[in-house]
Length: 368
Image (cartoon, rainbow, N blue to C red; front, side, top):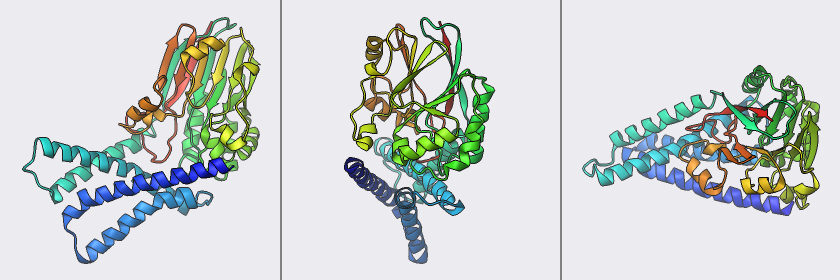
């Protein structure tokens, strides 16, 4: 467990550094030009400091607390995190425009007000888009299937302080309305701050499919405690596939742990060739899209379903996702009989917003 702890410390240090620099930039470019003084300046300074520390405090120090106050503080701090991103991006765009085209426009309340208003409008749009869950319908050929199979994929729900209750019920109802033969959850069902998951068991138990509900681990299952998640999923009627394969109506369904697993278990990843049988119509569930179409073809796997990337969640971070996951960042990729689909996901991490990456539930019709 030393490696996960060290990794967590490094992540927190990097996050606080970047987040702190973003706040300094906002203060320097948006608030300082307002030339506030006296009690007004002190109030804004205190409020700005509280906003800065709120997200790290909730997510890193009070992550295991519960109650309406923590949930409300988490929501507001997460919204602020998203707004910070757009305050910085819009301010950078404004500085660039004024450098190139409008050099005569000085800093001041008018510029700060326009920039802040644009950022707030984008953030509000992101809050709305994140709640509009759509259905992505696809047809994928899987050779030697005995008949068509309707598979619904859910990815990156991130149940926790933000996604729970009414929001989770909306997702469950939409999934059931698609009348699936099979439901698969491709990781990050829970968030790292998953609290009182037993409250959500009755909702998950309402998921209905002829062949059942299956899931694999994502990185957040390990952050939340994979043992706790296993017990929770069993009680919810969800079968967790951890490096094993099962047969469903002639289809071989293979589930692999997320690539972060060895850091938490201390065990090397099992070779997939020792888990699955070649020559069968095969679907692989793997949270993080680290495999390639060439590898799938070599293994005889016909379809891989993944998530994790959220398509960046907030534009323009989709371009960063493309840089990291060059082969399969998001969407559908096909080479002969090998297909990879990377879902945008249905929930959110961090800011409860989506801009340019609307949430989705995926309905795949598998055909022979």
